[in-house]
Amino acid sequence: MSTIHIVGAGPGRADLLTVRAARILARADAVLYDRLVSREVLELISPAAELHDVGKAEGRQEEIQGHILDLLEDCGRRHETVVRLKGGDPMVFGRGGEEWRWLVARGWNVEVTPGLSSAISVPELAGIPVTYRGIAGGFAVVTGHRHPAACQEWAAYAHVDTLVVLMGVGRRAEIADCLIAAGRDGDTPVAFVENGSTARQRVVVTTLREAGTCEVNSPAVMVIGEVVNLRGQLIQPAHFNAAVDLTSLLQVGEAHTRQSC
Image (cartoon, rainbow, N blue to C red; front, side):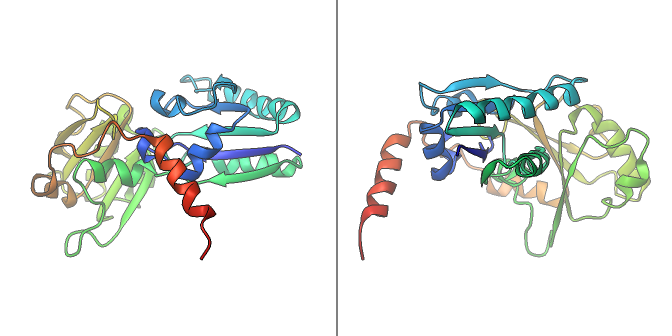
């Protein structure tokens, strides 16, 4: 019986992919990937694999989601190893749990491979730890796709030490207004990290009061809290080696796996 893998692609860089995910992609027969999966991650997929771009267009999410489910079953009937590849971690606002449940209910064998969530890794790579002793004892991750008029929903998060908002760029002014109305200080530092972990990464630092007026482009992670001020003390020149040879790393991992005690 075929196996459908729900796999997290991480925040963008291929060398931030898990070893397990890279190995699955290398032997995949079919891959359905989302809009935020980077080109360099896609390059790790087996050249023989069948590729399907299933990124959702604004306003057509439900229509496309139905197509994705049908396509997963179609690929499962024709292939042994099918991969549903999602940016970040598939269970963090990626509808991974919904697809998992749907597939299991229909009798499919499903395996999940977690990925680095952009909610934590993208701020971290930009010099912003989401927790820090004495500054932030906890954090919350929220989707920006909440009901347009539901300021009362944001009130529940107004006083969280660090608030990370995913998919919130288009509603950043509304989000900021709701949080301030709920008692959050308008001078609270805010950072937007665009295209996190990639060569196109850009960081915009502002305040909650000014968050709606600054120029920010999607995709970007929004971070609200005093930890943003740590960036000036922590950030250093990019230290990731863009030339990491993932093939060599995977071979080393396989060699260790084969070694006996």
